[in-house]
Image 1 (cartoon, one colour):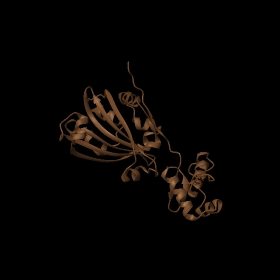
Image 2 (cartoon, rainbow, N blue to C red; image 1 turned 135 degrees about the vertical axis):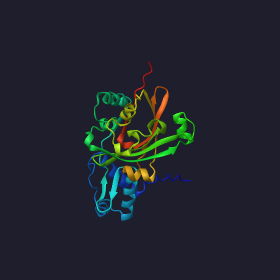
Image 3 (tube, rainbow, N blue to C red; image 1 turned 90 degrees about the vertical axis):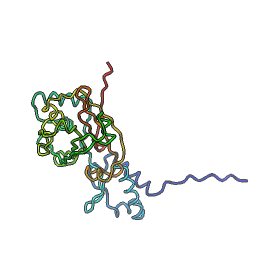
Image 4 (cartoon, rainbow, N blue to C red; image 1 turned 120 degrees about the horizontal axis):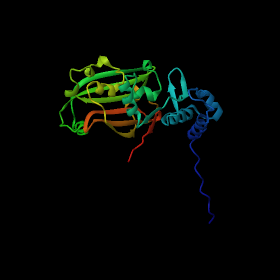
Length: 261
């Protein structure tokens, strides 16, 4: 009996098209922000049907390599500025606050002027859920000031966050007035104005795919995850602020240094 070699399956044609386009994007033959060839041009180049081209582009979108806009076409995802989240940024922010300088760790990490920084905000009083109460070390139902922010630089969305403060600490103060946002010096300066000097920060990052609201608000390309950072802000042994911060994972460089001495 003659042994017949097992044929090796060939990659589906749309994957071959996607592989070639991916190589061009990664080699900057198609530079960031540049349009890809039209569907008709790609059909002619690769001798494939329109449906094959669209499958290839859909695959590249799911990988976050390209974006498609109605009326413009499909283009290589532009390179956006990356925010470096380093462990020393809060110490630098506190030094700024003590010197009375404008700015926050956000503007410093983004390397933008204070005038380029803005935010959308929504304040409300809420009762602490069990999860948030545990992070604060208080009883569930303790009243909090919940602040929802969407941070922008030059009008472009950069970061979403939900920041909670103990209501009995901030009620009736300028910190509780949303009209005072954005506050020069940020959270560190706000607490300092109330006589509280931050002594420690604990952050726990995790990665996941964005919710539809997050993807829309932060303009997250298809296939790109977000990094979610749970932050606890300490004054001595007391947690005075709990926040959940959401950013596009491709625009964040986490750089933490842990002192074990």
